[in-house]
Amino acid sequence: MKTDAATDDLLRELAPQVLGALVRRYGRFDACEDAVQEALLAAAMQWPGEGLPAQPRAWLVTVASRRLMDEWRSDHARRRREETTATLDVGALAGVTVSSDEDDTLTLLFLCCHPSLSEPSQVALTLRAVGGLTTAEIASAFLVPEATMGQRISRAKASIKQSELGFAMPPVDEIPDRLAVVMHVLYLVFNEGYTASSGVTLQRADLTIEAIRLTRLLVRLVPDAGEAAGLLALMLLTDARRAARTAPDGSIVPLAEQDRSRWDAKLIEEGVALITRTLGAVPIGPYQLQAAIAAVHDEAPTAADTDWREILALYDVLDQVAPGPVVTLNRSVAVAMVEGPRAGLALLGTLDDDARMAQTHRLDAVRGHLLEMAGDTTAAEAAYRRAARLTRSVPEQRYLLLRAAALGEG
Image (tube, rainbow, N blue to C red):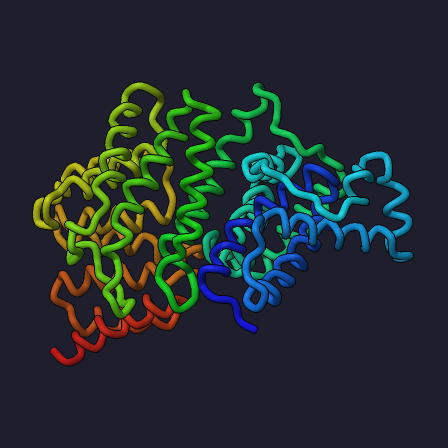
């Protein structure tokens, strides 16, 4: 029996919270993750026919806890159970109605970002456990093959299992060391929600909403961290455009053609206030700069009013603070808008030999856009078609093929 979209969204929202509750009580990250997956499967099978329980999260925690109890009682798990008896909450395991009103997701986030793990493993594991992303989605975000990412996640789980890390927020003096990775993970979760790397829908609001919620909690935890505030501002200013990004049929509406009256004015106001308060008050970082760029877009009454010179200046600073292929890709568009499409294409050409860009369709998509601006319709059509072959997102594929077809007809 298939679940409806609302139930799917609820299960995705609750999954990291349930995992956090179990790891806090019982330890054994790997076993808890398996138990949560089984509980989610049980919910997907039972809830459509029986209706939602009064307390869905408590239901999932209880079912997952029973799965753990069954596992630890089995002969196969006897040795592992004996070795960890001292660290388990056996009394809670024996109960049949385990519930929790605490949201442990932020604690789970910091656990996955423990300094004993390598940074790539930290990010990969957190995206899997907290963000609920598939291995393929995470690989796409990092521009690496899926097999490579699967190995990173497996190694991270094994490291947590071997180290027997306690489930608690890190001491105050350790938080700064984990903050950069935590923010990077939240940024990637938001990006996957805002533009899904695969599937039939452009956006996954469950991921963007959860990323914003967790980032708000993070800002409360570290109110003096300017980059955390910058990250929240970036999310708010970007998510403000969500309603205008697709037409009623689900097709993509590019930024320049969006109905700006559908943008969320309250989110824009909050985001602008955050970044205005932060810029100049603390050391500048990439999230603050990206938020400032988003603010320039959002404050322009029309696409024609966009201050591209200011955007290019901000990208120039971002390229100095946090250089990388994605920054170069986006900066090439700003260069094209200020200096002309051929200048943008020249900058874009510096990415042709970057192996990381072979994992994404975005290089060809941007090239097609700039070639179209330059009037080279034949080359633009070919670039759009190459990009369409590379993407796993159905809406993006359709959009790129439509652009190509329009140029072919012309």
